[in-house]
Image (cartoon, rainbow, N blue to C red):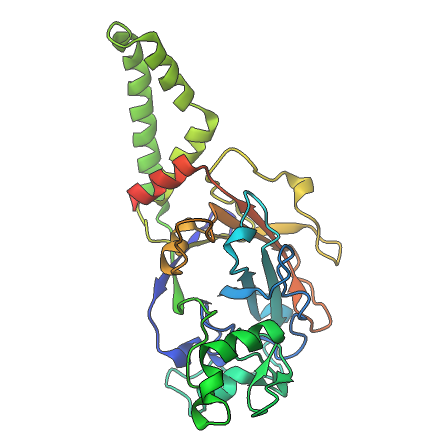
Length: 357
């Protein structure tokens, strides 16, 4: 994929078996469909750096690198905090991203692509155990702390054990149906399907927008006779760099307003504001020493599908830009932390986005 190419991600309903690890899915919500079954992130790595509560799985993107055997299978996993108060402006400490990759010949998956038909397996069994690694019933992350009564359900820690107990497990403990309900922590689950962005239409719209902008500027002197000086000053204030960046953002996404993700490894993010745009020193290198490069961004439209709206503080972002190791290094079969940049927009911009949808 060249730096000029952008692939858009959209949400679609899918049968649950298509979102399991063996199908190498890209998806939003539910529990993570882990790629490598070893070296999963530790409990401390999966904590919010602000409130120290466990993070919730947000999405994963299957992104193999062509021609690189160690990255024949490659998935990026994004987690976020469910505590609204942790979402302060342009603060990324409530989010984390991890990379896992495997060669085509590995100990977990067949050499040939997965079949198109549903495989015979127990989905509950698969979701809660991976090659002997027990997973938390609530979040699907590593968890070996078992319920002291039934010993059938495991958790990552006391917080999720308490959450499950209050939700359903108090009634279901020691019964066969103890794992049949859905975790209250999980976001709604959907498949992420992709299609290339239509560059020709974008270029045409950009030209039209530029033409409209030129025409508006030319009309300003003629309006001066009828508008008060304060009105002209207000118009000038709106022609700020921040507004131009936001208008460019809206114009770019307008042909496909339901896009929730933009993928362009080695490309550039589509920023929502001229403020809080990272420079090279702001993006830390990978622990292997290689430079990190932009890979994909999560769009604000995804928030509409997460059922996180609230009257007060809320889970929120303008865009989330994910940067990954430029050489996609191996880390001794461990899940490798990557870097996420959180850019927010003003309340005024947020209102404009909502009106455009």
